[in-house]
Image 1 (tube, rainbow, N blue to C red):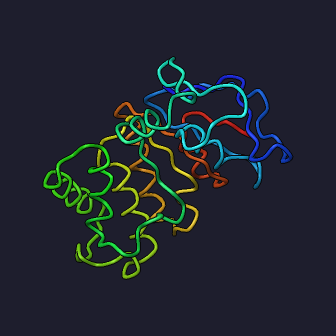
Image 2: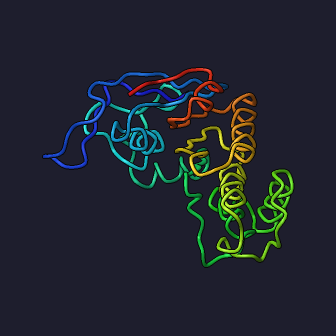
Length: 211
């Protein structure tokens, strides 16, 4: 489980402070959606939960232990082993092949190259990404790119999945594939947090936090 205690954040000393004194639990085995208007800090909260940003005040806890004040190296290791990110624009490396983009997540998490490649192929097949594995991201559709990003996030079987507007650029059919996968991951015990304005996404969640 991830929790935040008295959390606050501002990008600079002069910028507006976000979620002042926010305390909330994000339980394992469930999907928590984060909603709110543009500028309310949905993406920022996910980056804080993923230890990519450091709070201005308060703390992020993993399984009851403070994590946001760990060293950069310790936070990087925790992310590498346990956290998968899914972004709205897929955030794929345009210079690398589809298979390499997916396998990268496994290599970062400590898999051997052979195992990562095998697992990447399994996930691409599971999510119906029927494109040559040597294709570059610019040679696939938006829906396929988002599924590739999902495969990359799931390759190491993370215990935490953070998804930032993962269906925002997708048609309903592609969005359902992504949502179904995230719900399945949660049902298998992971902590899944999704930021979204989409009421369909919010309805699929177990809990909702409105900023």
